[in-house]
Image (cartoon, rainbow, N blue to C red; front, side, top):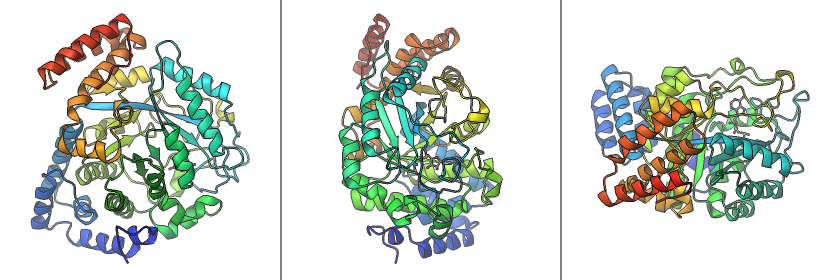
Length: 472
Ligand code: SAM
């Protein structure tokens, strides 16, 4: 039976409830009166239930769809302004004992080179990332208790935080590793991680079992209940996501929102972020084998409807998506993007020859971080390298209540401008620097409080003198 408060995956992601939701949404896809009511509720910016959001996703009235996009854009502006936070993935190891049929790291793939970075190699990767200007990383590993035990991940986090090269520093390490125990989540929390990210891949249990035929990841309930264990272990920022293309997108969309509702119901705080990856070509993986690929129009609609349904949850889009696709969805609700990414183990120091590639998937957006920063500014966004919230203890329900009340805005823009200035001083190309300095001047005026504006001006001068890491 469906119960968002249950701790059992089959009850909080309930198959029958999803089927009924999809049926309800489909039957009401041109019910103008109901759609108007849902949009009215959505305008309060307090979110929607999975059923209400599913109706908007299926809505086939052209004028109402335009309203949905407009509202998503407005909510994005209200909650996140024009800031976009930047990060990069760091692949530590591609050893893996699982059999995920969509992932080149699956254990039966005997021709992909298996690599695991030593602490010295991690040092070199991190220096390369710092030299690009990155301050925030997402750690990625395959699941392998022998090659990638939790001790290896913890030691790597320690190494990463310890490296200070020139003015560089990694200030927030998010972690994307396989579902684990409460005890291990506690250790990750103690190591100072930001968000614990785990993609559900698919919420459809039957498909999940087929797509993960072997290895510990086969256990659907253990995987689906991982966020509960992470929260019990003290990690209050968790990042959800599904891999679009594996199952019907409508099913995944409802499952994703039910997962958010469950976390909110049990822990009083929903996911910190939602990622929207789509399956990509990779070694041994042909994305066309999966029947449920979604086109760019559907992808944009999903992003807009997630934005409306969970306005206070950050949304992430990676370099799996092309520049064109990212351009299309950024304004509909994305708050974080990766830039200059390498998805191979050790790829930042040494690009690999194609025939020996250890990469997890083909990157569509291959531009450098500087090009991405420049492009964002050209579209009127403020690229941000801010990591202040969790370092100031603004995590979990503290972050959510600040975000829901709109208070978070008082620190975000100043922090974005100060971290952008650091980037411009230390890493930017001349053209990016020129554009960025002009943008900062213009954006200072947007900071609401006079006193904050003054402090920001002083700190921007300090940054010019070589001082770093100011934050509100
Ligand atoms: N091994 C961990 C796990 O099982 O969750 C870490 C995650 S893995 C390094 C990161 C994510 O990449 C996976 O959760 C999956 O959604 C995604 N992924 C795997 N194969 C992919 C492909 N061919 N195209 C796009 N994304 C893929």
